[in-house]
Amino acid sequence: MRYLGVPLISKRLGRMQLIASVLDQVYWCCVFLLPKDVIKTINSILKSFLWSQNDMSKGKAKVAWKSVCQPKVQGGLGLKDLATWNKALLVKHLWNLANKDTLWVK
Image 1: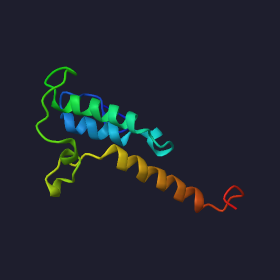
Image 2: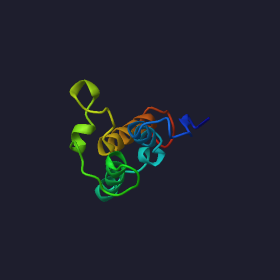
Image 3: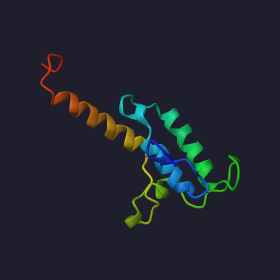
Image 4: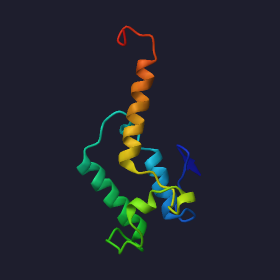
């Protein structure tokens, strides 16, 4: 069973796959520049979820978060860095606005 492309049964999914699907579904990230404190808090929640065993208690991180966000070919887990992803989506949004022939752009 799926909702918005994300499977609802989490027992079959790994923690990494759930984190990746959450980062893909962050719609407000493409419209607003997120403050650094918000990004830090979201990353903290994602880290806790990735490294904890059964609840959201803080677990000992096995690898630095920057390494986790590296592509798989570079030894990372392939997760998106939220700060970089936020900036990329904003630039894409601005590019789409600038390429439209509207009165607002003129």
